[in-house]
Amino acid sequence: MHNEIFIALLGILLLLLFRWAFRHLPNEKWQILAVIPRHKTDARYWQGLNLTYYGVFIASAYTFALSILLVLLHTTGMNLIGVGFIMLAMLAVCLPAARIIARIVEKKPATNTVAGASFVGLLLLPWLVYFTNLTLGRWMDFHLSLRIMLAGVSTAYAFGEGIGRLACISFGCCYGKPLENCSGRISSLFRNFHMTFTGLTKKVTYAGDLEGKPLVPIQALTAVVCCLAGLVGSYLFLSGFFMTAALLTFTVTQGWRLLSEIWRADYRGGQRFSAYQRMAVASLLYMIPVLLLTFSPDLQPADIAEGLKVLWQPETIIGLQLLWTAVFLYTGRSQVTTAGLEFFVEKKYIGSCE
Image (cartoon, helix red, strand yellow):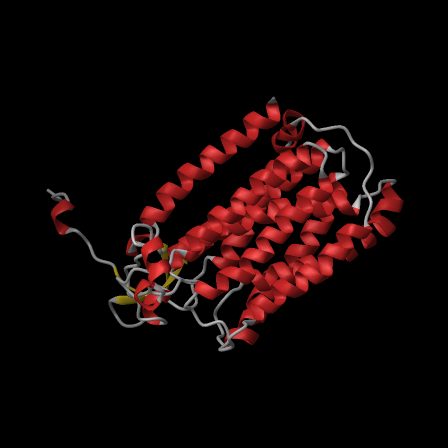
């Protein structure tokens, strides 16, 4: 019963988060979190570095996904030192890959792509598990099951992909097509549920000139689809159906990426079938055979209450805090927006010297 309660509560929390986010994040004030003065431009004004809510939501997505992964894997008794080593290796590769692949595909110096990062991570994961078993595993006497690891990672990734889309809504990127340019059926479907962005510094404005226009809410749809897959995948994982959990979450997230590109209006490389769609197809062709050829030990259905204990360990708490901070500092410093600051004294609040 613990598992069902956990999945239900998690679903309710995500529902409340999405209801708030879809309503407020397209607004102008939810793009810039804070501004740090960097240097003076003249006697009175400073140029500032913008810290964005994009970074907040991306860091939160990474941290939440890793938390889910640790909880799920802890229920199976998997060695978390080996898991931590793999996650650090993937982060070290995937964070820079998100920018490098976006630059190659979109020909822009300051952009990120979750699709590119996930593609690289999925390619590396089986080899990292194999390498970890050969090195740390032999030294510390443990063995990581590839199928269980893939099931946990693909389920956690579904949550990370879903929550990460809130960052896109905040920054106004990865936006959908204008309803006026869609077919009558699509326009009718999203007449009462669409995205309308405001703010001159939103990407949808400066790159797409679509401020104030009703758009297909593709970021919101992606968030809902991926997190629903994550919830179902979590329940299947906890029930011991590792293969089913992995196949479902993986095919839903990659299949949705393949499909959802049809309704996106942002620049994806200028090709009818985008590079990110090709990555999704390649991921499916690569990972499904890997899953089918792996084995997992026979385990009894797990109790989520046991898995949640890992989140109360000091090393887990500190590690997740460090992860959030590192990802925020990497993704939250805006390179495409800046700020001008002026500091002055409010003389009416200065007390008399007498």
